[in-house]
View 1 (tube, one colour):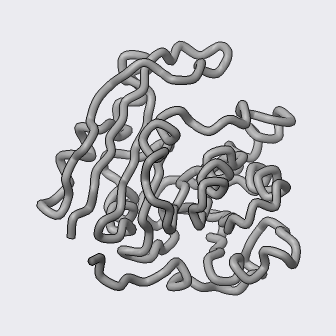
View 2 (view 1 turned 60 degrees about the vertical axis):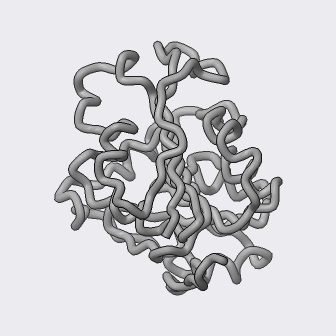
Length: 236
C-alpha cells in the first residue's frame, strides 16, 4: 500500500498570479497550483531567465510543434495506472492533453505565457501553470508521474533534485531527450540519462535507460534521429 502523500494543492497561491486566463471553468484548479515568478534573475541558477526567448520563439509561429504527444511518453506511460502527473515544460500541451485523455490529473508547467494560452484553449481539465521552475516550489512526494520531455535540464541544477523529490512512492520519473550524438558540444552541460541515474538513491529502481530510434519524425530541419530515455520507479 502506498503511503499517504500531499496533493498538488500544497503549493497554493492566488489565481491572480497566473499569467494565463483559463476562464471560470478551470479557476479552482488554477487557484491551488499556479505560481508566477517575477522576471529577473533565477535564484536557483543565477542565470537570466529565458522567458522572453521562449516567448519570442512561440510568437514566431502560429503553432511551434506538431500537436502530437511525444513518442517516449506514449511508449513508457501507456500501461501505467493514472494518477497525479506533472508535465514539465509542457509547451503547447500535447503531452498534457494525451495524459488527461487517459485519466491522469495533470499539472502542466511552462515558462511561456503564449504556449500556455494555446494549450489552455482545449479546455481539457488540466491545471496550466506559468512559472520558472528553477525559482518555484514543487510539492514533495505529490505526483505519480513526473514527465520531463526534451526539457533543458542542467547537470548542476537543483531543479533535477526538486523534480525527483516531487515523485511519490510508487511513482515514476520519466525523462526523454535527444541523443547527444545528434547534438552540438554546446549541449554538454545538460542532463542525459546517465547523469540522472548517478544521483538516484536506494529508493529508486531504474527500469529503462537507453538510446533508441525516435518513434515520431524529428521536427523539420533538425538532425534528431534517436532519443535517450530514463524511466525510474520510486520504491519508497
